[in-house]
Image (cartoon, rainbow, N blue to C red; front, side):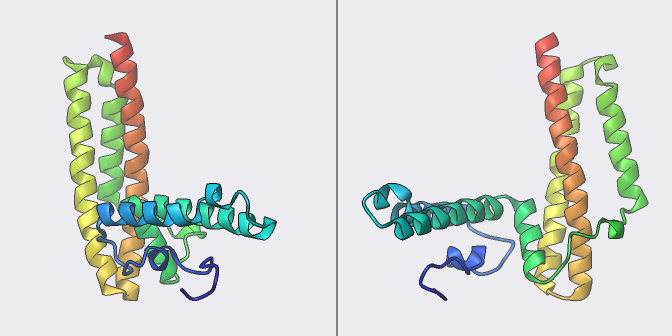
Length: 184
C-alpha cells in the first residue's frame, strides 16, 4: 500500500486489480468481502476514536470502490477519469444523429406501448433491443479504453454518454413494464 491507511489508493489499487475495463467480478466480490472483514467498524468497537474513524473511512472507501467497479458504466467512466478525461463539461456532449434517432424511436415505442397488440411482448422486444445495444456499446468501449490514446478516450467518453442514455431508457422501460403488470 502506498500509505499506512490506504485511503489514497485508486479503486483498482485498493482491490489489487489492473486498471482494465474487463475485470473478474467474482474476484472483485471476493476481494471486497476479504477487505471488508479486515476494516469493518464492528472489529474496532474497543479501539481508539482515531482507529474507529479510520475504519469507517476505509469501509466507506471500499463500498464506493466496489460499487464503481462492479458496474460497467461507472467503471468505464472511472477509468477515463483516471486518464484525466473531464466529465464536468457537458457542452462537449455530441451525440451522433443515428443514435439520437434510435433513442427517439425507442422512447416513442415506450410511450405508445399501451396501443400495441401485445404490450408485454412489445416491452420485452424493447428490453431486448436495449440489451443488444448495450452489449455492443460495452464491446466498443472496452476496445477504446485499451488504446489509452486521446482518440480512444474521446470515443470512450462518447460511448459513456450513450450508455447513460441507454441506462435512462432502461429505467423508463422497467417502469413501463411495472405499470403494465399492474394493469394486466
